[in-house]
Length: 241
Image (tube, rainbow, N blue to C red; front, top):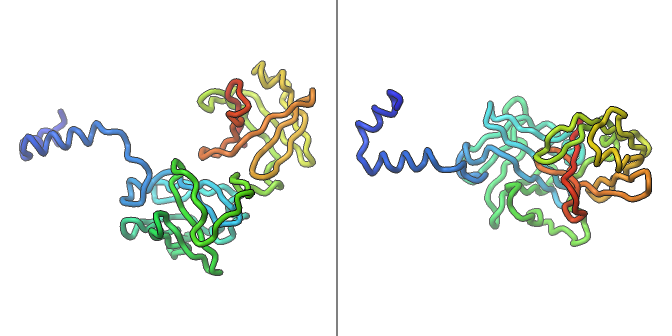
């Protein structure tokens, strides 16, 4: 027992000490906007019309992690660098100087904010079911994938397996739709698949194998692409290097 623990125990009643012990042993609370500790985590940001991406409110220095594609698709958050919780159920996204860019408040069960040009944004915990953006119902045929410009898709990716473990293999998506697996890859599954082409549409990435079949991938909260579970087989994913 640490010196601090002994001090607390000596000054607190048995009931209070039991409560402290239960809280210390409890798992982390789900992401919410009731406290700064609860608000830190992964959130889903949407702006109607199918525009949606995941962002991370970090506890360290209150920084905000936003994918480059999200900043391009939603210019209203292009300068977001930090966040704060001025009151429960209120989250503000700030620029580098600390000025408020978007002020989210609870509205009909979800956090919503109005942009500088009158556009509406919604912020929900990444683990919650998707909801239409506030006051801007989304058509049922709109993709729920992230708004990532196709121009940002080309590049080198690390191939991932169970638990997003890096296999040491590298996949390159070339401009124009060509895909190429590095020759040194020792992951038999992806080597047999032998991707030769790719395309991106409706928030999903499709890899085409040399023999003609294909596999679809969806963007996840950890900024990796993971194979659609509906396709079965072992888990497969990749993340930009």
